[in-house]
Length: 160
Image (cartoon, rainbow, N blue to C red; front, side):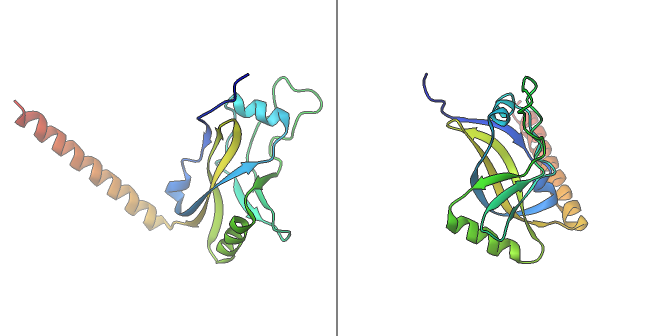
């Protein structure tokens, strides 16, 4: 059987870019059980409430990611919200550990996907936004949208 190639998105954390200032982004592998992989291939997972951490042993962990139980699984099925180990290089783990030691920073997952057949998670060092930051971003986005509409309207009637 030929090896799977390409990227298949499973889950995305859409609120992350709204709620956080995104810093450095890393790609990490995941240690999963067989039933977790089958559930992910079916496209069932949520990472909206998940976060990552580095423990005192120098290992990175994904916490609170919801991969529901495999519907055709047996008594050996996995727990939906178990803590999953992230696979990163030692230097990357050290960088992440130093980054989250600064106050106000956290590791959040941005997306969960398959890359060439392997489950990967994209994690970012993030700083929480204040309410006024969010309002400013919304106002900026709305202004940009209005400018695009005005240009489209102008171009539409100038083309005649």
